[in-house]
Length: 117
Image 1 (tube, rainbow, N blue to C red):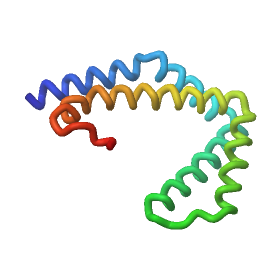
Image 2 (cartoon, rainbow, N blue to C red; image 1 turned 90 degrees about the vertical axis):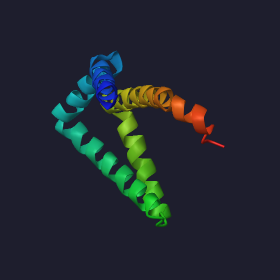
Image 3 (tube, rainbow, N blue to C red; image 1 turned 90 degrees about the horizontal axis):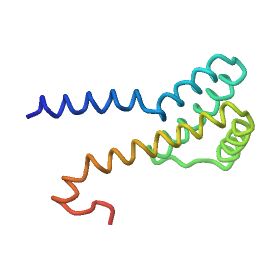
Image 4 (tube, one colour; image 1 turned 60 degrees about the horizontal axis):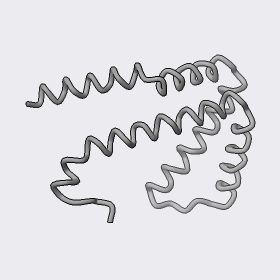
């Protein structure tokens, strides 16, 4: 049985790789990485995001200065057309993954009931 599930998971992975959402995401990611200025801005933005997420997960307080820095970083990358399109593609990909997760978790949700409330 597990082999069949692994086969299904591998087929799903191939489907994701061949999806227009992933293809567009990869194209934009490659464009950002090919532009040294954009790559630097995007890497800085991602580092700020990761640091804030790590602090939240560890229950550490986030200073107003860190919040301001994050907001400035978001505003800066959103002004860059390629990075902005990359972030939109990331959002579309995230929505697709969330929908797949919802479908995959449906048997457990039916068994245990909704975990959301």
